[in-house]
Length: 228
Figure 1 (spheres, rainbow, N blue to C red):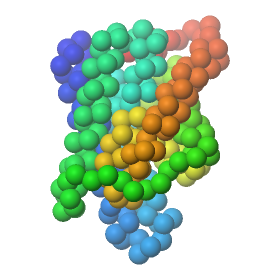
Figure 2 (figure 1 turned 120 degrees about the horizontal axis):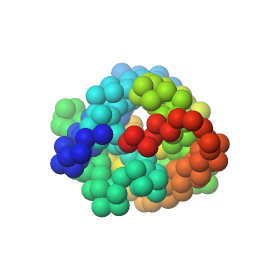
Figure 3 (figure 1 turned 180 degrees about the vertical axis):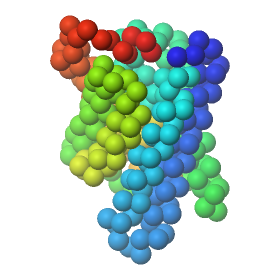
């Protein structure tokens, strides 16, 4: 990982921006082309999201670790693989990048720049789904770093592709993504009032996944994530 904080923050900002531009932009495109078929629209949203994650993690991982996600940054801060101050800066860059990515998608599709989503995503089932989605994401990252660090990008992309479909919430699994999607009244949106419970579930599940991985992977010979 790069020692230059400015470059790392730049990577987190631009990576999260491209992630959100992909999530929101592909959602807008998919909904427009699906002629009311929600399953086709979701598929059109899923594939680009999984694909861009592989690209972004591959090219930006060596610079910043390619978190693009405050829940992931929290996990690495608790592990002391990133300092508290750097973690706060990462989160700011991620949230700012996510918002810029949403606005970029709006501009590309000639939509109103400033929006608030009206899409309802709330209730215990949705919150539990976000917990499951985030637990699985953090588990995927930490376990794959131990097993084969070079496979993290593909593993994360494939996990999110699958989690879009097996979770009731379509797997936000990321507080920065959740906040930014609250600012888009589109297929990928979430009402601003529904954001906080999602974020709480995501952060809690990330920490639970860390605890589980520490137990499951204890005494393993390789410890790849210490290199982060």
